[in-house]
Image (cartoon, helix red, strand yellow):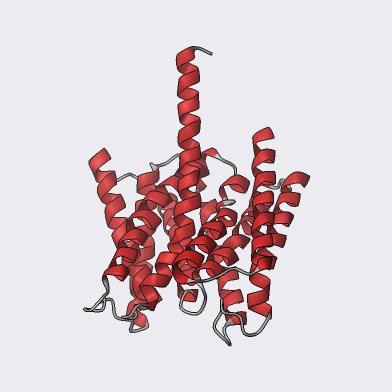
Length: 314
């Protein structure tokens, strides 16, 4: 290998790690931004927020795509179906359900509860590929899941928790479980798109599909698409952050790392995101984590390390 090849390889490696870092940090802060946007005052419906977030993200992504290629991509009917299905699963049911839950739970709790995603992704990927996960990966997932239970278990099963509104514990557990499962399925079925089009176009068409479906849901449920006229500056800032960073920048990074890393590594963002979510909730919203949560975070980091090290060795 020449010096130039070695430098290029190192540069590419740092770029890949940078994309993974964007997914880790930005998505860890999105539910914090969602919580600010929907709680107000004035109040913004989660469905309304998610719909405008997807329309804004799709417009930005398609504009970026057109500036690069000057034309829309040519996709087969099968690829269009995959693009639409993955976008709906990830952004309507996956992220959309988690956004819906934000009305009744602390932002840190939601992002920590979404830590089930690596479990779903690894298991579904194993079924699709017909290859069981290695022993070390299973151990890493088990350690991470144990940490996740220490974080979300007390709020779900014990009364009087500040993380969850009274009476919503079971509903939230079901909603967030479904959110993680559908996000994982959507992430995995989008793989055929990687060879067909660029990450920008994949993300743009996925968010466009989600925006259309969310708009139909708004119409059928008689949810207004017009934002409150007295929207607070902090809510507008939170929305812009969700549209630009939480949807465009992080989704492009996510699709890029999906091409490079195995699903077991990519899905570890759901383990790291809770760290970011807890810190933001603690500092900005006074959502102080319990001692069990701190122990759980330590276990989560241990699980992430086990999965990444195993993946690099293989």
